Amino acid sequence: MRSYPTGPAGPRAAALAAALLLLAGAGPAVADDGRPDRDFTIEDPRITESSGLAASRAHPGVYWTHNDSDDGPYVFAVDSRTGKTLATITMRGVGEPRDVEGISIGPDGDLYVGDIGDNLDGSWSHVWIYRFPEPKELRDATVNAVQYDVKYADGARNAEALMVHPKTGRVYIASKNEDGGGLYEGPAKLTAGAVNTFRRVGEVPWVTDGAFSPDGKRLVLRSYFSAREYAFENGRLGEDRSVAAPFQRQAESVTYTADGSALMFGSEGARSGVVRVEAEGGGSGGGQE
Image (cartoon, rainbow, N blue to C red; front, top):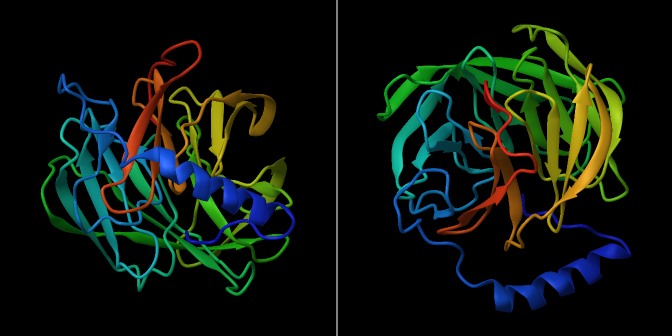
């Protein structure tokens, strides 16, 4: 999204961002050795507001992403070896997306797309989640997607982080607020044609994206200038630690690599960069974000 912190911290953060931009450069280039899951640049000129990342389960080294607002029902498969788009998926049957902010892959291999942004912090009575199976072949295609209506038990709010637990399949959303957001837990199973109520189960800082580790035991949440990784057990946040997130022009996305050995941090903008940061303790094995 294009919304930045306001209030006492906002101007200071904006000034810091402006100063650091002079040092940031144009972002990472494709890895020289051609290996997957390294720093890369998203080359597709259509992708100018990459707001979410999810490491493919079916296609090693491929990352799913999307633009946020005013783009349409599109999801892109980007090859981390080259930065090029391998497939553009058009979702059918989901209406007109308003503000798509997050993407995740469940244990069933389905892609979950979160149309959950709300810059006015409560202007929309409900938001949406779209779901479709990850394609077995990477080619341009139109797919039928299921649409879920989502409300929060404590009222409407802005959010940019959608995470599907890789073992239980339960969906979580982290809201975005300068004074601290909440971690919201969805029902055990989402239901189409009915309201899915998400309930607050934890407190989190300002969040622009999040992701579960492949084993489901860790949850990383990032903001514009930092990231934290939490222990996650029985659906609740545990002990947390700071993660060395890179500075990016508009830090919007994060996911674990498919093997859990690293975190991939992305940002918005034309030819935006995705940066690899090694995960503490190495790979967490099995499953997928």
